[in-house]
Image 1 (cartoon, rainbow, N blue to C red):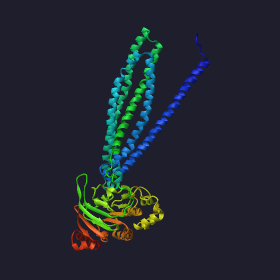
Image 2 (cartoon, rainbow, N blue to C red):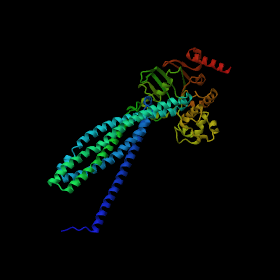
Image 3 (cartoon, one colour):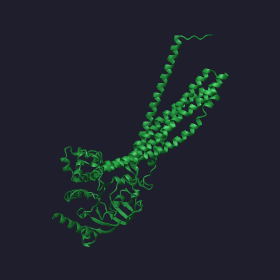
Image 4 (cartoon, rainbow, N blue to C red):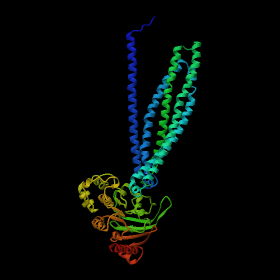
Length: 535
């Protein structure tokens, strides 16, 4: 019976093709939207976990890593992981669908011919494995170069005033250009790698076409397959080339993402040196401020022995001053109390409890530290003072600023507490930075207040004003003061003198002056210096 072709049938098949294309488009849209959304959400979670993990790492870790390297892993490497999740999954699904669909039909036409046409594909598998290995190593080198370049930028932006002061702009540009050239060279190597492999992915399947032309032609002549089957088989064999090209993109994206994930995982695998141990007493929620050091010794990881057999007992509410030459261990000593560095068990006690048995968040939340080089954030002055207590009200913030002798100057600023400080507080003076940091420490009302050369950037008159205002505050808390100025420490309840990591003198100002030792010598030199400056 002869089949007739009518306009209605043509319209039906045309609509059918349109419908299949439309459904395919909708499915692909949903697929891409879902995969991209999942990839973005995964990147968001991974970046949050990465940042959260950085917050848990100890200070000693940041002494040996570069900020630029961490920034590179948090940005460029994260982006590579996202690309791996999105494009790799999407291209892989497309390749599987195309390859599987074409292969099934080819096998249905002629199994033997299909096997011959697929002969080049085992070679492709070996090449793909080689490509993946080389891209992985290449991308790791590229990211290392990006980290070096990122570090160079970060250091120059942070230290731009030093660079300009020494007119080293040209030298720094040359240094950055070297990092930049290395980064470009490593990228070019990967480009050459991909430029070689992608044509191979197209060429090898083409060999299958040559095999098909020869063996398929013979089969058509022998009548084992029809000319229509031969044409169809050729078309479906051509369809296999697209999945191979997609596979090249997948390997590239996957290996780059895997290399970046490996770099991120190295950071995530880092364990903090200082954590709550199993013996920690969760019932401790506050401290009174008594401090006792028993045979305390401390050595840095590089083998530098800093503190030697330190014994010291401080009652709650006492003010203890620590003086001594540069490098004698003063800052290290006070950093051990809030566990910035790790001391041996049984050497430091707060309220009679080993600090390793006090929950870390409880210990640190009751200790306020003001260092010689305070760090201020690129935020408003109000936010910097209230950094430790974001819910602090206007009265509390202004009270802390007054105690630090900063309130009068704040009121002279056009924007007052809403003054934007810029990066590292660049818009205010060094003395104002220190007083802002002091106000920040006072605001949280710590039981232990550590002032590590906190008055180094203010004049003696301002220092006297601040100390006078602090006396009422310091009377209710344990205060540790490190200073090179005798005028800062002479009113302390106890003064200890460190020399070469050991306590060599201790007593009140009057007792140490009468002893005529190291402390008395420092005092005499400073008195003489003041007399000379007054001439």
